[in-house]
Image (cartoon, one colour):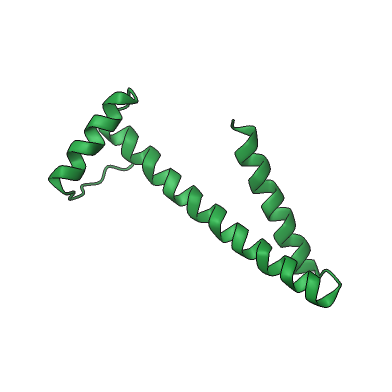
Length: 86
């Protein structure tokens, strides 16, 4: 596991520490958790955008390409991953 050094605003650090404590997490664990949540949220938003474009293309052309099928399969995989963790 890598160690990093970051600079963070004092007020934000206070909020991080308070929330980490309330979740029974270390500061480092919380920052790792929060970072992974942002990365995962970004991946979901990208997948939603790609599926939206694929569905529009399917609606406009009346057919589905291999790329569109792959986008839909990828989205289905992400949805299963998200819903199975709950």
